Length: 236
Image (cartoon, rainbow, N blue to C red; front, side, top):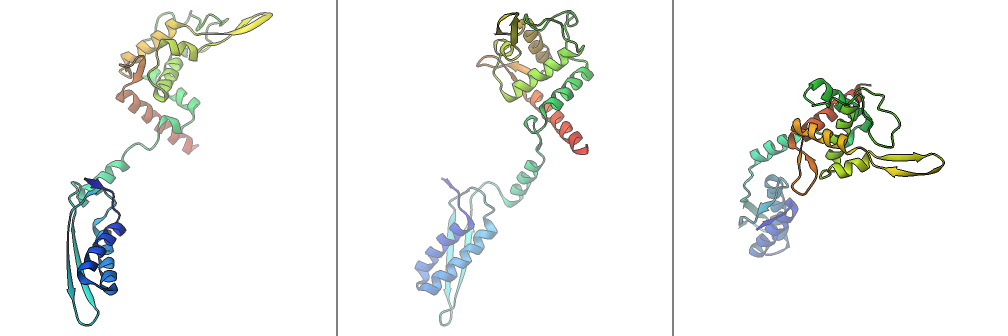
C-alpha cells in the first residue's frame, strides 16, 4: 500500500519508535532528529511503500544518546531514475495552442498547410459562397487553408464535434431587408470537405463517440507551430 510521506513524517515515525526503545525525553529528541536527517536523504518527495525501518539505539555515558536510523524504501524508482524522470519532463513542450495569440496561430497554421502542399483543395473554391446568407464569395483566395486551420484549432480546444456543430460555428446573421434578421448556419459541404481534407493529412480522425477529433500527430503539429508563433512574438 502506497503512502505519501514527507521527510518530517518519516522522522517523526522513526523518533517515536526509537523513543519507546530508548525512553526519556532526550532519547526521543535525538531519535527524532536522526529520523529527519534520514528522511531528507532518502525522501525525494516520491510516493513510497511502507518499508521496514530498523532502529538501533545505543545508550552512551550520562544522558547522551546516539541513534542511527536505516530506512529501506521499496519504491521502484531509484534516485537515478528519479533524475531521469525529471529530465524527461523538462524536455516536454512548454507552449501549447492556448498560450499564443489565436489570430497569429491561425495565420501560421494556414501558411503551414499551404506550404506543405498536401491539403486536398476542391476545384470549386473560387466560385462558391460559404453560406446561403452570404452575398459574395470570399475575397481571400486562400480561404480554404484558413478555414482548415480554424477547424483544426477548434478540434484542439474541443474535440468530438462534427459537421452539424461546424455549420453552427461558422454561421452568421441572415439579413432580410426591412424584416428582422435571423441566424443562419454555414455550408455543410464546405465543412465536410474541410474535415475530409484534414483527415487526409492524418491530423483528424473519427471519434468513437461521434464527430471528429485530433490525432496525436495533429496535436504535436499544432503545438509545434504554437511554439514557433511564441518564439516569433518574443523576438518582436
